[in-house]
Length: 318
Image (cartoon, rainbow, N blue to C red; front, side):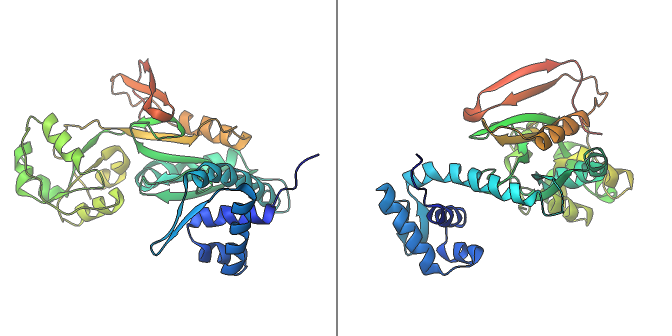
């Protein structure tokens, strides 16, 4: 016989742990803050452990709370998805994908119609992120991120390489004859400011002083470049339309190879048929760029351990 499970208390804790706030948890569950506090206190007494640390600065999870929360995030997320399948009057699979904005706008959105046409029973929900995402806490099936493929607790498969190159207006590009000329202009920097140093090193300049504003979004940074605010360092393949339209120019062919776009998901989580369909479609849409370069297609797991398999064709997005 199964032990009685305090579902209301578990639901209250799960919501409070996601929001790190009793008030927001109460708003979500349509109860009072006092009710959430009472349920969490009862769960702590039942388990014999503290789940939250309470201070004037707010709530934080204890080590025990951190150990329990991911299981509850997944369990209640699965229940929510089960009921959401019937919202449209029939059985639909919900698939929630969060994508870094540059990839979403530069590559993903224009192709989603093909996925929807091929998989009409999949209710695809797209969110965007600035490369900071918690797959478990946000209830995501997949997250598309930029980096090296090593994210704690996640499996990762390379979608495509994304080399960085300077981008600016055609007018500014006319003033640039060699890489050192860039140092006379504002250098627009993203949340990865070290990437400019990597690019300059590739250009043969080891010691440079960077100046220019910081942006938390590569999309916004490139928009600033389009408006003549300076030179952005960005994955130029994601801005091929702007380059073709004459809004942007690539003054130098030099690249900084600092990462790529990866499809990531929670390690050891069983993948639904909708997840498998999206994975197959997304990787299949990434074709050989014809560059002749040797790309590395990697599948990574938590702890930063990467296994590499070399392919004779470069994996790039068209």
